[in-house]
Length: 600
Image 1 (tube, rainbow, N blue to C red):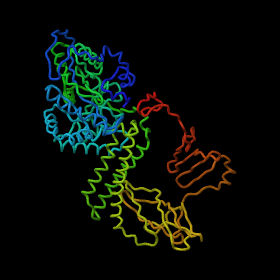
Image 2 (spheres, one colour):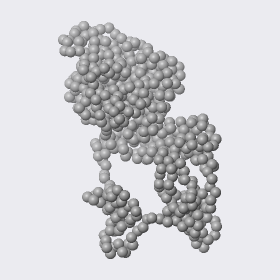
Image 3 (cartoon, rainbow, N blue to C red):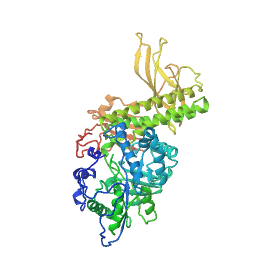
Image 4 (cartoon, helix red, strand yellow):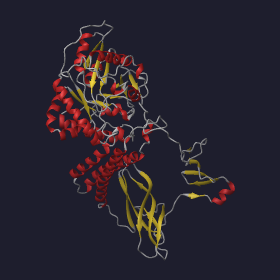
């Protein structure tokens, strides 16, 4: 969200300018922000025509208007705080739909609707009836409206699986419109992903597609295409709609004029809504009045699908590309969220994978496992809401997000440890020494450093080594060594090089050095000898790498990967391990951008 001021139900021109990232609303040709003028107000249930004049036909525009409000799961308020604000508006929407037959509305996100059904069960059948009648459209089809750049790809699939399960169970349908109004950029695999998940169209608001009108077919990296609408003036281009005919006339004509350069033929899409605002059913009788008295345009109150189907047969351009980046400061704001998110995504996926393996060799309560994992995934997926994972929120939201990750981590770790214990019970470890099982949760083979802490009570043990399953020594090193008074080892952390197959394990044994002396291929040239030949550099080298260090500052000036003869460090900028401090005077959204202050 660009500014805390958006949460207000009425928006001043100066704030509207800020919301649209600097565009001056004074240039919008007569856009009117209504005052409290009620002289010709029409009731939500309809009204009589107050005027009969018609304008000369200038070519009729078909204007499709979608009533909505944008729901932030958490931002300037916590999740519960926004539910208290938004749920009463859902009740107002249902009342407006009862009173005004021509009114329609759009909802999105399980995180909004699921608690509404729990707290207002008496409204479920009414809500479901309006969905079946096509007067309420359910869109997005996800648990929350996530950022699509920061979370992992598997998480995006889980968003949809969790969302579609809810909509199918509660409403007997699955949303087809990928309603991503406010996400901070869209990567070029989204067409492939969305079509593969059953979506037929996509709507977004940030980052203008190059040289494109508002409607086009977006072609993904694999060639998949999806019908797409980009919102040139975001989701507030027909809000707040005035309540008098005179003001509504000027308001509608200004909105139409703004949108003409982006229209598909004579069709255009406008959005009557904003963040956390009540519905405006008076747009229906005012649109009816406008249609009866004007010939330049016809206003239609619709759902997103109705507009998208109206343009599906049009000759639309095909656009390729990556609709990024926006708000790049969000890639680092509240960095702990990003770190915990990636850790937790890996923990949950590993727990699921190894539970599946464990179920093949031992007894696993899969129903209990699935219930536990679903709870953990909900915690992680909620934090993928774009204002949460991107870090542009108040401290209370941050604290709740980190608590959610903590709970998810406990659940996932418990399931993973249980699965690994079951697998371990079925591995024979009968060999001298301390057996150590190293697990690889990735789908491909991995060679990497593993470590384990061992304690020793046998007298006289001076050193330790590591053997693989065939009894061959592997490179190892002791750290954090604690010795008894006679010099014998008491405890140590043993680092060793492990080779483990994909989604598999490898068995190693920690032994006394005499039983299997460890070796290492790493060698360092003698520093004294090096300094004679290279007074300014020190070199470390093995069969894979040649590392050059600056003797005076410890800076890595060269790192050569010998198998490919690849110099990793740019010779023009030989600062391999230098930490550079760059002051940032921006805000949570932009690095060195204009710091707007406010609640965040």
